[in-house]
Image (cartoon, rainbow, N blue to C red; front, top):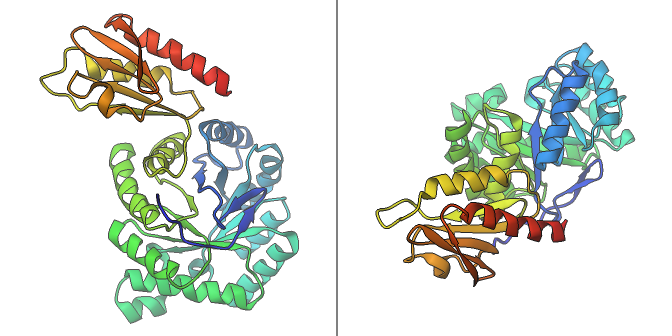
Length: 355
């Protein structure tokens, strides 16, 4: 059982982050925000995939003007991504936005930042304080020579203290870089010194396959250490993939359960059915299932039900046939041709009862 770090609560709209709330899954749209219909269509796809908070890019006045309608029609809280322009920040704060992402290293004007925070406090808008290796303050680059883990943590601690010094506490912190070890160390240093909730992820992780592996390693280490209250998997891919990978990471650590978890054998010479094809078909057919179900597909009698007894349901395959089992108990023998259909039928009955 992972023992999570104790943090205070922050609310983004009606979503609680920190204070032992379930770890929140986030993503970001890749549409032009001023294209309202496209942005809302993607937000709805993300919501259906399990996304609980969504961020939209707001680099221009035109994007800021679109935010109000997006917020009104979005099924989940919306965060506006602000980087360089205090003017755009103030404009978007009038839209009903639930939160903003603010990187002080990009603005670096304390009076402007203070004014933004005061307006957020007045409107009960949450802030994500962002610290990135690519936008570290010059003073820290001079001190450390490069964006080290210590430099990133020091920046996050410095700006956190500034936020609190002006009476603003409704914020979480995000410390990100593309280097996994640097990222883990920076978040660890920060986590040991504060109770501020942390948004974790590996930024610029890369394309789907490589990025998923890199994210799973970095995010997984932090989560296992009890660090992380909300998460985004950053991939060069459809944002829906980010949500799906995030849930797989959380599920592997027993921190969240959503949808189908498949346990299946590696391939070897003992297998007597086309196991890769069986697993592929089951995964495709169950991709829309939201109820948490652990499905085991075991390739031979050596593994069979014994290794899969933790699963809710599964197949123990043998010579051109399989035993269909549920809660560790055999239900019936099925042929290779019918095993997938019989398994899917039984899962459908289970999930309909749950939903």
